[in-house]
Structures are given as structure tokens and as C-alpha cells.
Length: 596
Image (tube, rainbow, N blue to C red; front, side, top):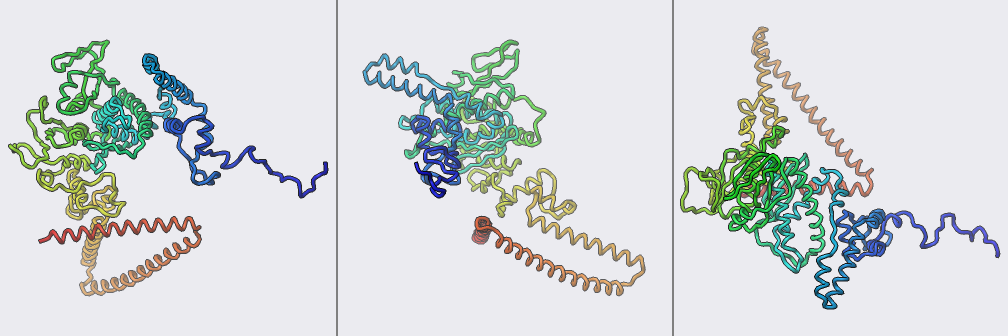
């Protein structure tokens, strides 16, 4: 065999095709290859990825094209050793047996096989994905939103939404609301077109979720409910774990137990059929429910049964809550917001939301119908402007007053929220007005009411005791805005200047200097100050020019990617300024049109 010359020799790093790969080709794998590697169908692979928390990746270089979905090879190897994968394969093989029995018209065998169908538990997955309880709380936003969404959906055969699953979602959501109301953890709420937003703070974590309005929901046809049901299956288990931990942290027994008497009592008012059960650890006590009594001993805890559909069920839960002296300042403020106030809910108001919000802030709720716990009422919340009989001892307001008081943390005046009037704008507590550059007029009014209720400063800064406070400190605390802080600082400087002039005149009188000599010295001082101001302005102009030159020079040095990013940031700032300018122009036109 002839020897190869030097040019015909193979390269040092030559690797034949089909051998070991390196780089992105070895780190990432396409979805089609992953499905073939795991020997699964695409729906089963998608379900397994959702349950395990594995999501597609975007490699820097897509080896097999931009139109394909890529996964990390380590994630696929992690799925290959998952015990749940074997369980899915067993279930698939067992379903084939059922299908074969049905095809042979052997009904007895098919029924017997369906009753023995293998099942799987997601408890180990919860422990794997959330090793700490704080991790589960951080991932609870989408969980609560999904559970509340399915709790409001109708049960249909086309979407495979089971009635038992809807009842379970309602039960879990009401258990969560009961805990938030009892611990006074609710911080913000906002009514939008999509639904009602809530934000609670539990163990230092802010949890925000959305609940749909109490309306008939229309199930769309273009939504893949198989994916949503897979997410819901995992979220139900996660929320049950979280509720169990939270209930035991406040010495409350979990899970709930059904009380047929209270369920039948609440069935005529609400259409909820789930039950929220609360077991309070208090030995040796006795409580009466209707015509039945539940006794307690030293060995048996008192069991208190509260249906989530019962009006005021959350209120009863809050009333028997034990007082915790370790509450922080914000929790104590929320607990006493509606203290000593009694509310009566009309038929047209959102009862579910108000039955949760009012007890969470220390109020007492009553409703229209049999079994109302209150006889004398101080507040009333009807939505209809015309009432058959109006009590002078009550105040009839719209439900928006409750939400605005919660966000402002003060009791707002009820004149603007009277029945029949157009209420003030419902401002979102999730928007930072200072960062957006535009502060609505009603937000400034609420700030002045907050400062007046806390007795920190007067509503108008710069008068009486307000002159003694630092405007920058008030600006940092959010009592006044930037314009008011600038005006207050200018007025404070003028007062300091006048005070200094008065002391100088007193000193000159003591030294025996005449008035004419003092005027000459004053003119010389003014001329020197004018020259200093001109120099200062020239210095400022020079500084601005230097800053502009530095910005332009830095843009020249930037790479194309960074320069494009910087230009995009400037465009977004300019859009924000134009939006603020448009809002101010609309406000000015509205004021001119409303003026006589």
C-alpha cells in the first residue's frame, strides 16, 4: 500500500460524521430527537416537561435550523431517569387493555379494568422543584390565577373539564382567601376589565393574583385545554401543600370537612358547593351550629365547619383569630382600617370580593337575606340609586369606596362615592406615578388626605409648621410631589434670606453705621453677586456642553449593539414624555370645557 504524502494526510482535528459531537450540537437537542430518544408521544412529552418544569432553550447557534425547538441535553437525560416516565408507560399499556376489552364488547372486563386503572402522585415532584417553602411562595402567582380561573369556568365535555375539578379549585381558592383574611396579609387590590387583582404579603413575599369577575364565562374553542389541564393538575397539588403549611403555621387544622347543614343553608344564596373547614386547636370547648352541638375534650380538638359559599364565612374565621403581638406595623394598620365599621352588602355588589376584603381589614359584614349576623348597620353598599327607604343613620356608598380606602390605607370621604354620582377615577396601586412622570389629580388629593390623617404636615406645605420640615424629606416620603417640594424650598430660602437681612441691619445699628452707608455697601454687594451669578450661569452652560460632548463621544466609542440599545432607551423615554404631555393636554381641555 503506497504511503500518503504530507498534503494527503488527514487534519489533526478531523472527526468523521456521526461520531462524537461538541459545542451546541452536543449541548442541545431538538424536540423531535428528544421524543424519539425517550420513546414517547408528543402530548406525553409535553405533559412530562410541564410537570417537571423543563422548558425549551434558545442556543446561540441553532445547528439544525431556526424553525425547530431546542432543549438542553441535560434536561432530557434528567427526564430519562424519571420514575414518572415508567408510570406513564404503564398507564398507556393499561389503556390499551381497556380499549381491547371495549372492542370485544366485554363490558364486565372493561369496567373491572377501569376500576383498577393505575394512578400517579405529584407529591415527590413538589418536593423536588421546591426544596424550601419560600420557593413555593415565589411561584404562587400563576398557580392562584389558574386555580381561580378554573373555579369560574363551566363544566363541559368538549374541554374535558370535570365538575369535581371545578369544586376542588373553588375549595382551594376559598381556603387561601380564608388564610389571607385571617392573617390580614392583603395589601393591594384593583378592579380591571380582566378581573380583580389582589396582592398579599406572606412571609416577606409579595404574591399577586387575578380572579375573574362573577359572570358567566364563555369557553373559547381555539384554546388547547389539554395543556391548561396539565398545568392545573400540578398547581392543585402545589396549592394544597401551601395551604397545609400555612394553616398549620397559625394552629389551624387542615384539610376541610363537609358540614351538610351549613351547606344547605348557603345553597339558596350562592351557587358555590364547596366547603371551607377550619379546625381550631382549642381543647375543652363547645360551640353550637344550628340545632347541633360539637363538643371538645382534652383529646379531641374543636371542629368548626364553615362553608366557603356561606355569606360571612370568612368574617367568622377572622373574628375568632388569635391576636398576634408579633405583627409588623403594616399588618396592624391593615387590621384596624375598618375597625368598628359595619357594612351591609346589597344584591348587586360583588359579594365574593367584598366578603374577603372587608374582614381582611378589620370590618364586619352583613348581607341581604336570612341569617344576617347584624341588626343595626352603620354603612350600606347598594348599587341602585333609588331605595325604597333610606336610613339617616347609614351612609349609602358605591363599592369602589372600599377598594380605594384599602389602597389609600385611610377612610376616604364618602361624598364623592354616594349612590347616583359618578365616582372618582379608580387608580391602580401597582403604578408608580413618580416614575411614570405624571401624577393624577385624585392621587394628589389622596396624598394630602393621608398626610392630614397622619398629622405629619398640613395639606399645603410652606405654611405654619410645614416651613420647619425639610421639603426633600417630604418628597422622599411621598407627602408632596417634586413641584411642591421645589416651591417649598424656594420659599424657605427666601425666608432665610429675609431673616439674615434683618440680623445684619440690627448689627449695623448696634455698630452705629448710617442708613446711606448701608445702602452703598448693599449696592456693591448686589453688583458683586450679579457678576457671580453670570459666572455661575456661564459655568452651567459650559457643564451642559461638556455633558453633551461626553455623551456624543461615548456613542462614538459604543459598539453597534450597545448604540442601538441606547437609542431604543432614548426613544422609550421620549414616548413616555409625549404620553405625559398628551395626558396634560387632555386634562387642560377637560378643565376648559367644564369651566362655565
